[in-house]
Length: 448
Ligand code: GDP
Image 1 (cartoon, rainbow, N blue to C red):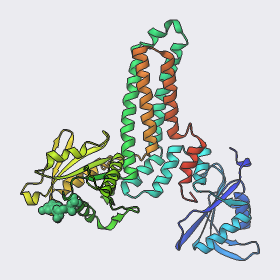
Image 2 (image 1 turned 30 degrees about the vertical axis):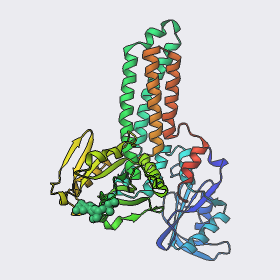
Image 3 (image 1 turned 90 degrees about the vertical axis):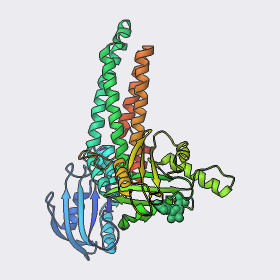
Image 4 (image 1 turned 180 degrees about the vertical axis):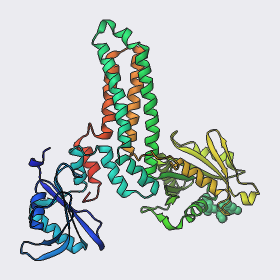
């Protein structure tokens, strides 16, 4: 796409409502001419000019700052104009109208960032991180999104892509020499290369899954028998952070949700109706919804009591393997037990009291850990789309390994590697469909 063939877009980039300052953004080939008209002379690149913004009749709309960023050294890679006026919805609207009179049109949501992507200023994962940064609900989430926007995630994907391409080149070379193909494919160097790739991929997948948790918050489904203390626990956890507790829209009688932040880490808690077999229609609907909740959860927190714990482990049965399991032995105040923690069968067991609060700090620490707290400087944000793509790559690499080791089918291995490369490329947008781009940028806010 070249600047000559596209139009000029404009939008109010600051949040609606009264504010000290409001920002209007323009991008495209007409930006310099619009700047010149508003300023009365050619603006200096990247200088803040104090200007009187006037309408076509010369009437003053507002006074403010005008900044011109000539292409390609701008956010979108095009000529960009930023107008900063008073943060009044009315004035900004008049200014937007004026800019449109001068040759711009209203921007669609995310269109500035889409142009930045199309002009190679950032890749798709970075563009998504821009939206995630703006929408971040916790400090850890914002920090992680910033890392992705800076390209931390993209660089890891790129490194993996290079290893993948190197392996592909080897395998493709082998099938070009059919008489030596079998020996070539059995070469331990190729197998080792593939194994390294799978190890790197597994690590990146783990990091990306943590990135999704940092971005979306850790989704915790609270499960257990009626009267085990689920609601009490939800209240106790939510009450610990009164400032940020927000009931989420769509709360149903069956699944009660709370969103809270524990030391800058976002948690989505869902208190599900008990997951037991029942003849009652209404209760059955509750159970169905609870099952749905479990499919989406990162963690299932089973609330039980000392003398019910073993039997209640059955609540874990319908869980997908990917869901982390946590057992909370509640009501230790009543049973005169001490708060402590153990690991049993890969699940963490914690003894606590929702009523007195004993042992709940250990639970909070555990949840924070699972949510990616303390994951360090380089922790980056990711989206489910990225995790799915990486899982797809893993499947293709499994198939490649099988083709190489068992069937010695070079053509098949090469095809699997080609598909793996394609799946990986979808993360950064090397391969992307218009539908995907539409879905990603359509969810941005206007002006970004
Ligand atoms: P749910 O049905 O699982 O949501 O359970 P509730 O949170 O409604 O609790 C059921 C009953 O157990 C209530 O009477 C609570 O006051 C009581 N309860 C909950 N947690 C504790 C606890 O830690 N200690 C004691 N002694 N009672 C508790």
